[in-house]
Length: 66
Image (cartoon, rainbow, N blue to C red; front, side, top):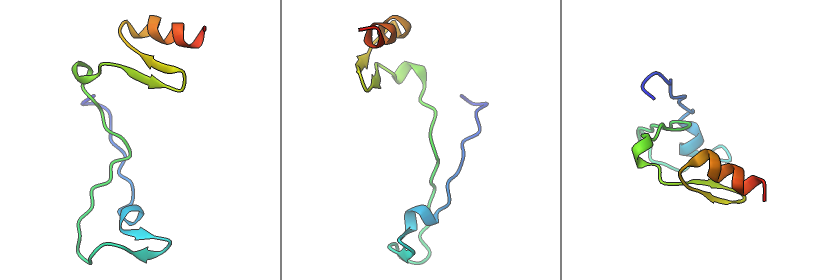
């Protein structure tokens, strides 16, 4: 995951709602669009069909073939 650039979203998406500031002036915002979770910390993948656990390929196939 070290080679994946993390997109930074505009701070205004956090500091404003409908064009109106909701945070104090000067508040610093870090708003990554996503993060990279180390594999060792992942215990399941959540889908609209349910949870897929290791081995993930078989778990996902079982969910979507049922």
